Image (cartoon, rainbow, N blue to C red):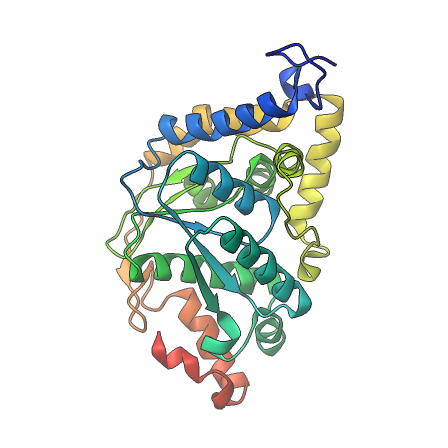
Length: 311
């Protein structure tokens, strides 16, 4: 294999693009993909204060590295979710990266602030860990972005994540979820921060290669709560298809975004209210986050969850 740009020996092959790159030009390729995505969707500018949800995994750390080198004003936000050693290692990787590159990092400890981490919360309310985890992350990402007055919230969702989510939404015809699936979600309420996904055109393997070439140390361990999750099954199915037909994931997602999602946009008539309990946007009177924690209060010792009174 030879690099497409300089014709030197290539180190990374991209079958879906029918090309390959040497280390220098591969890093340039990944950076350019992110830059194009930001400009194409008008995600943010260098004048904006950007908050990046950092998990300690390859995607968010790679994105932090790319955006910092491109001169954007990005602060990291790490939620300590209370998932045993997994959460401890995630925090260590995130902290180490921030300290090494002298970057600003905000940390929020769910267990300390709310009284229960994700693992104990899911057991107490008998709810799938991933469901409660996702709800907590979405809530606190938005709440903390508002609290610290950031203009934009960004996440490290990649092409594999987005294609798998789309597959699941189409499989079950989740129309509301399909209407919201996009690399950018504009603010539709004063208490909702604009959200963006600059990595949505890059695969997990491509981002892992970026981290490997730049020696970015990230948490490689999968979340123990993810075992059996439908998203992993969908990713596996799509990866099998990708092996036989390179570019399938990209065609699937891009086709939806360009040809199908515009028709959903014209049907968006959701009215958002302010939650009676916390003031965050919701379609009802009380948001699903507050309902979940109210149930936890009733099922556990009130002393463990008294942090909810501070919402």
